[in-house]
Image (tube, rainbow, N blue to C red):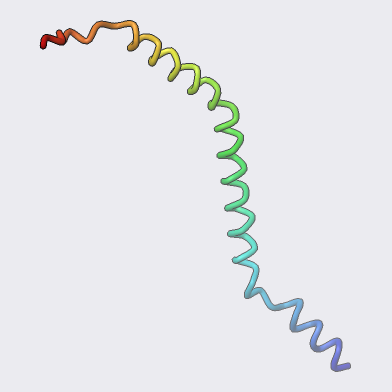
Length: 66
């Protein structure tokens, strides 16, 4: 009988439920961030390379006079 009382109190205790909810929510947000970076990451790298190539080909307008 004592075992059933202990099990019933354990079943009704919700003190850790909020922690579990936050862990699941945080994992979902991190996973979503990884998916977004995987999708957008290559485009960002390509755009950065295009900007560097364009800036390397431009004249700065300054003359190096000794």
